[in-house]
Length: 218
Image 1 (cartoon, one colour):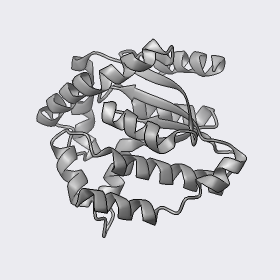
Image 2 (cartoon, helix red, strand yellow):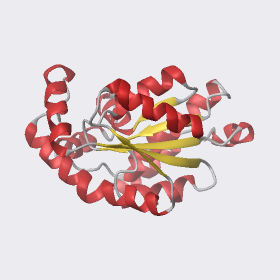
Image 3 (cartoon, one colour):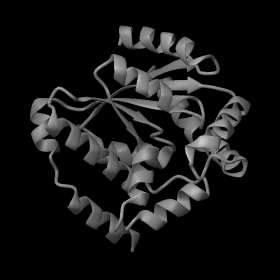
Image 4 (spheres, one colour):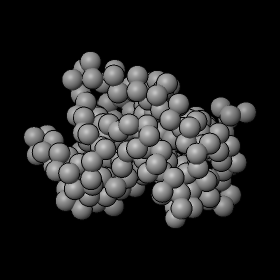
């Protein structure tokens, strides 16, 4: 059943990557860190200062969940509520579609920050299968932050964010999922020398100063 749904989703995404690939392959930076590590805030600052497009896997999934008539809405909602990772085919289709649409609108927009992905080995394998030869992953930008700081930031954010998962119960689950599933992915990229680590426990401006140094070198 799910396989059939995925098939129908991929048919609905007109493949514009061929056209885009004649111009430039998407250059991707994966942005990873625990919930509340400041990934979204730092991505916004990067976009303001550099020619990157920010794609948040979580935001794309939340938008798809809310989209009227989405065949995946309820499925996505259930996974998010449980703090679990949404099936990779859904996430990659949404990311691929967003990159294609961006590059077709403006061929100079080929640099992407993909925030909150890949979150586990299944995500990584799915990406490698679907995107091999179609996108270049330059490095992983890793925002390193203690669990307690992450939780406190998210609880503070939850007072105004309206996000259903910014509560302690969901956060404990999300932290566990992050430690068990995402940290091993970061370690894997580290072995290949493709991780740039930033101490994310400091102020926004201090963290961004480090980010600028990294992007200056890259």
